[in-house]
Length: 389
Image 1 (cartoon, rainbow, N blue to C red):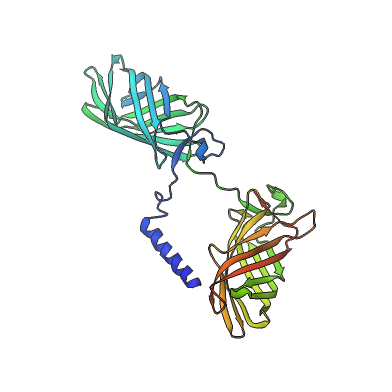
Image 2 (tube, rainbow, N blue to C red):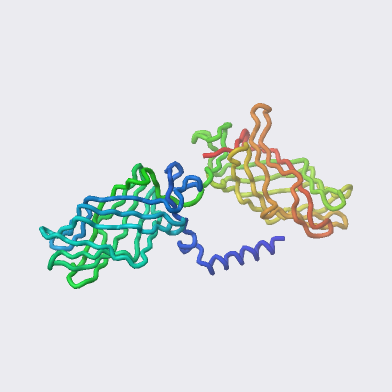
């Protein structure tokens, strides 16, 4: 059963390398414009501004530094951007980006937007902020006979808040024309008038809170009550059974499971499955001369955010030889989730790790599938509650 799994992982690894997963762009999160920073830097679908939303802003201090201590200073600048589809980056169409009331020293300057199918994008960077970049939009500025130049638009920082703001500080801009400065830079601060509250965010739901094993029954476990990394988990069961074809059952009266946490918390909480033994096993009335567990591993423990239990994923191959019957059943991806139920204080009962009639794949003379039922009673640690950080 594990050969197919190993080959599957190898194929997945090859696919990962082929498509460049891990190179940055393949795993980059989509950017959106969010109505709230409550889940920063994430944004639920319901909290995202719709396509077509206009970001309206203006500045009274836009300036292009041209060198020699001189700048083209503009008393007005309007930047309006229309939100397009979420993506990496989010589409951001530049409706308008104008400069007005510009002067170079005492000389008045004319300024004209030069548009050639402009486009733009907003990419999340950190916290509630992002970078807005615009293409194919320029400013042609003429200041008497001292300057005749077409400048490219800069990348600017969009800072989320109430209200948001847009800033640029000495951003290098391109230039072309008959009379241009050597290395122009752009500086401005834009006040956003609409929307009044916004955050640049990742277009995805926030990750679930990390899972932790707790010494007390708390929804969110305080630090003093968390079981530390390296906590041993010991459990035993007397009701292990696999119902096979025809209604017969493989039963084991003595089953033990041991594991160890590899961190104080995680999502999922990393757990090492140390051992699993099956003893006194029978197929109907036939004693089993072999009941072996191999390829034991765990995918960790993840708390259900609503119910008082966690999902514990355990991988294992369980091989039985009972007289003429020999078969292997597997706990593997899609069939390996067990319930880690917290201790019950009211009933004074310990925690359990259980599954009830879970269909699992099999090979050999017992049948292609079986139904696993088992309840491991946790003796260590006790009490233990599956909680959130």
